[in-house]
Image (cartoon, rainbow, N blue to C red; front, side, top):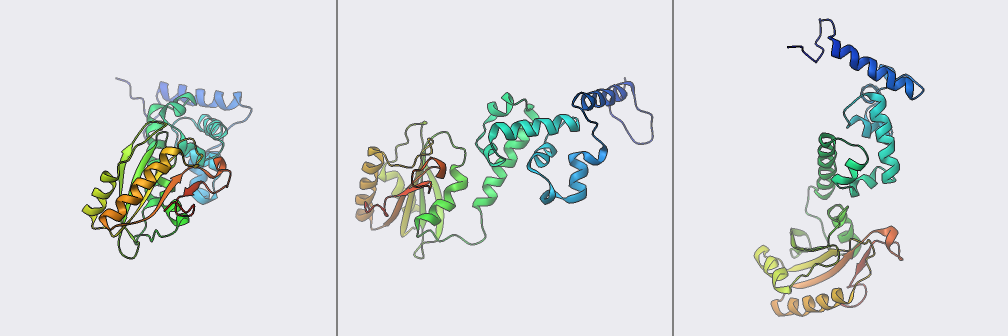
Length: 255
């Protein structure tokens, strides 16, 4: 049986040499030779993550020859528009860009970890203003292709006790019944709630159904003596004529 990996202290096997030749020929084909010092790994050791470009960081997460990973990383950034744009990609987008299944899994995990890290802070956040609510929800709606509806249960100081995803719908709709919303609030012992849902299109302008459910939530809140602080529709700033990326029913005077 022929060993295919190189270990310290022995001569390279035939397949090792062939792989090195293939890597060298690929570098030559692109018009330059990649030195060891040019690899993403070497760059990381030299300057650390903060000193690396977006393409270098992305290449570091990909497996394969140095030149190949750098070229693929550059192509991915071009297709996504930016490093942040990759957060909106699904598995098929990575596959269409030529990313392997193993690397797709790795990148998806990194994106999800980043999403969770940005949404988890030490002390429970105060959510008493629409801009604070929108900032808190941003990591949760990033990249979603379906509409989801959440209830954020708050204590007397308007600090978050618990956030619950009430419904998850299609790309066009997600229905939330007040009974489901306030059941979660009562279970959490909340004195106030904030409701939020996303529009996958990115445009946060409320639909007629959004207005109707908000009125139902407002009436139900009075019946159970739990304050409805706000209901936000979440989109993206670039798709919002107002440039904010969210719509607040309280600001609009409907709560």
